[in-house]
Amino acid sequence: VLFGTNFYNFIDRCNANASSLSADATVALTRLQLLPKIINQAVGDALSDLLFVDAILQLQQQNKFDNGNINENWNSLYVDLPSKQCKVSVPDRTMIIMNDNETACLSP
Image 1 (cartoon, rainbow, N blue to C red):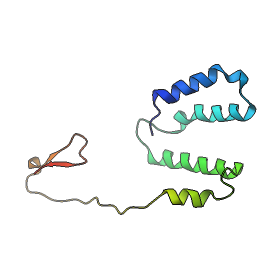
Image 2 (image 1 turned 90 degrees about the vertical axis):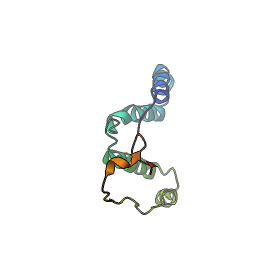
Image 3 (image 1 turned 120 degrees about the vertical axis):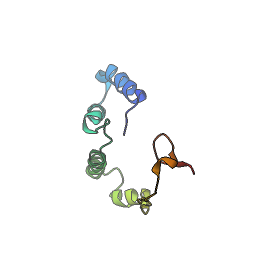
Image 4 (image 1 turned 90 degrees about the horizontal axis):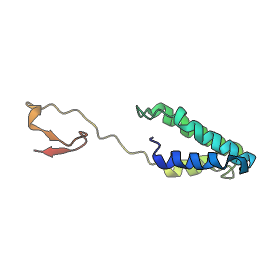
């Protein structure tokens, strides 16, 4: 998870109008400001991403945004796919040309 300039610009605009925000909006703004501190953007840490999603689900359950159907809604968004990653031994690995991030084989 990476936070772009649009996110930070939005936070800055909200901070500029913070005096006119309701109590709920102030809490929401505070939570948004804390997101970059919770999520490890440098490493792409899946554990912090998982904890972030768990925190969102807990907040939704507390606030009953989804009328108690949080797990059903969440589960309907996720489709588990089988892993297709495997190790292949080759006599000369220099013959295999990969793309820049090594996610696709370009040649042979």
